[in-house]
Amino acid sequence: MNLLEGKKGIIFGALNDMSIAWKTAETCHRMGADIVLTNAPVAMRMGEIHKLAEQCGNAPVIPADATSVEDLKALFEGAMDHFGGKVDFVLHSIGMSPNVRKGKHYTGLNYNYLEKTLDVSAISLHKTLQTAMELDAISEWGSVVGLSYIAAQRTFPDYGDMADAKSLLESIARSFGYHYGVKNKVRINTISQSPTVTTAGSGVKGFDEFVSYSEAMSPLGNADGQACADYCATLFSDLTRYVTMQNLFHDGGFSHTGVSMEVISKFAKEEGA
Ligand code: NAI
Image 1: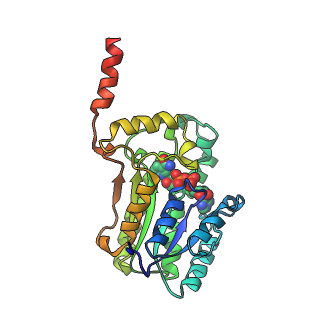
Image 2: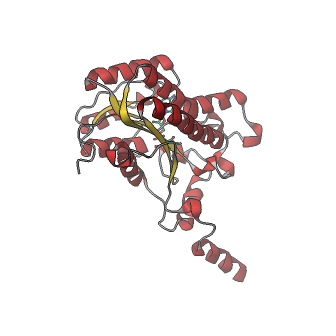
Image 3: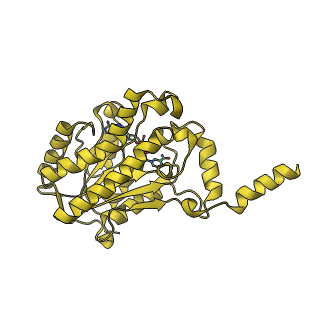
């Protein structure tokens, strides 16, 4: 399927082959896109991203800390050099909370860590978009996608300050989506993805139980990383040109299910026992 033939995109956040960004890069390449890969310099020490680059037609890898405007500027300039023109799509697949990593409870946050959480996981989207706009780096009808989680709308106690980061991320997508839409018809959306077994996902306490609960609550079951990659590709394509400023649930129906028979029957058994 050549849905993305001729499109040029930057993909942030491919750490290893479990990463949603890794699967999205493979999928976009398979669908005909030309890709530039990027990640934080520290994340590249493992060197796995170079394997992905090879698989994606020797895609250039340009390191960038997404909290550094200077790095982002060099990234967009390098990508435009490589493409010989503007960028058609960007995947922002970045998340990290030092509070969650260090097991800090939501009611006992370290505020320096909180600033880092918000900067890395949300404000980096604003920095990416502002840098792109200043350089006029994204083509008309271009598409930017960020990855979110339903903890932005409903409370999941162990998700900690990442919930606040996701709320901010979705808000930035909406607010910048307005301005970039008016200025250059660039669309900006977030995908709210099912819990997915990746390095970032597994950092959340009780993650396995979380995945099982979500699976039992979703009529279609959890959406996996590959399904998320496929959904990203549709948003990068011309088939979704008028979708912008949205938070799009990609979760097998979880977000609109009050309770499932599978979960109810579990309680019935426990009461009967
Ligand atoms: P991952 O751990 O493979 O990807 C997270 C990426 O963020 C890594 O590649 C990491 O190097 C990058 N990153 C961290 N700090 C950075 C910085 N300063 N600059 C540039 N990159 C930086 O995990 P996953 O799950 O693929 O995460 C991708 C996105 O999907 C994140 O936004 C995450 O919150 C979101 N998401 C994940 C879910 C899950 O259950 N795994 C569910 C819903 C959303």
